[in-house]
Length: 350
Length: 265
Image (cartoon, rainbow over all chains, first blue to last red; front, side):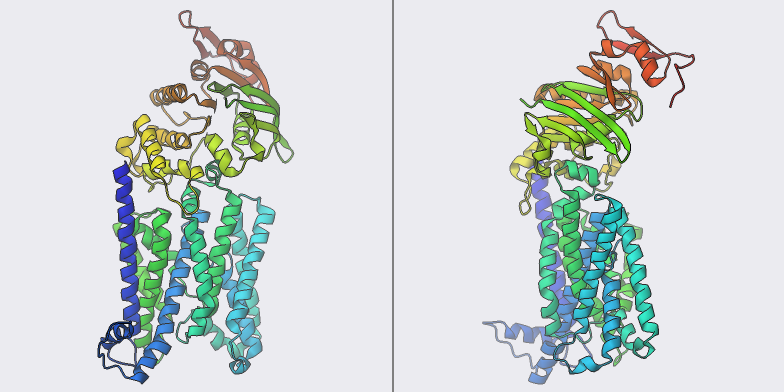
């Protein structure tokens, strides 16, 4: 038995190292490939050259380096943050509600952000362009958080404290209400529909280091809180009642996990728009491959989701060059067949 | 010692009162069987002790009030096996039993050598060691029941609550499960309180029976005193004869054909 436990720990390490390697490779691919800039193979050499104590002549010119560092790098890092955050939040939500169909947008983070962005864009009409900081993400973030708060208040006020199901249903109601408001605002401001639509589709195209700085702290805190609760999420799998008799304060723990997952989700959604599929499917991919212990699922979702979104962002840049294929389209296009393939070969369970 | 004392424990769901002012004292190491018809309040009483429903009155373990304990402390004092445990099919037996150690493991730590030792011992005791790495979905009903019991034992609590532990098992596995509980509580002097449907089995395995009817204890004592044909007729509206084995005093309840006393509700 002790050997078996040591074995499991050793395999955990293999998975984490493997996930780390995949993420690093994905990031290298992400910064190396693009329509402009240096030859792809020169970029990793240049990155190595910039490390202390290493000198390699990569032949990358200063303007080319600027493309890599100021345009591609923030985009890749933001993609990693968004993908990792959506996936780990999805894993947390699925665990806490014991529902495999739940995604991080469940309680209204996305719908709220969408409403906020629509209102901001409709009021601003490009006037924001003169501002030093674009206020759209900030407004979207506030709306996302407020919407989830409303869902939580409604869900717990009428549903009794221990029921996760009422919270999910409250989410459904609040999301439809919020979407209806968004449609209403949009109908009255048809001239900005294109801008709003592009925001809704989600994009990493205009990512800046500023965006990265904006959401990185949320992603970090929320991931740490979620990983801290990995054991609680395992306990949640046997049901609320039994979780309670195993010493978990069900209502409080659920609240903490939901708040952490929601803050992180709201932060990334407000800078990237609504990127679907990742938060729902990546945790399932991880469970199918690495098993369902949350000690593995949470960190692997973080790394796997990051790698997945960074890679999914690559074809979007080249396919319709100079136009961008929306990343939400690519994630579903790549992810859905792969997911179906896994469903066929392995058996899925919630 | 960790005796369990219940004073004026009452449970209600809105207007509906499930348990009315229940008083009892269960000595350390005793096994008390709760019997009574469906809806008599057995499960509600167990759930109140487990801290799953709000209740009036006080419940103490070894003199300590349960209401003053944190969730983790309570989980170190009382283990609870529900009637229909939720079984995650892809979880392995050892991971599942490990959940029983969660009241002892902090936020940042992982299971210690001691925790693993406890799990190994429990798995050995319940003859589950060979199953340790199997997924729960691959187990039979009887094995699953043992695994749930193993998880509760891994909590190392002085008190074990079992809600209908044998309702899903055939007669052979029922007996096996109850023998196992008998063995375990003798070895570790665990106090057991269980709701049981089968009256004969309840009388055979427990030290004392408490019969609940409409939320109140209507009889308490050894099986021969509690299980009388007359009382069973009144409480269950059933027509039975009660035989006592002349050799070992075992009380055997036998359903008979004939009209129950009053309509069943």
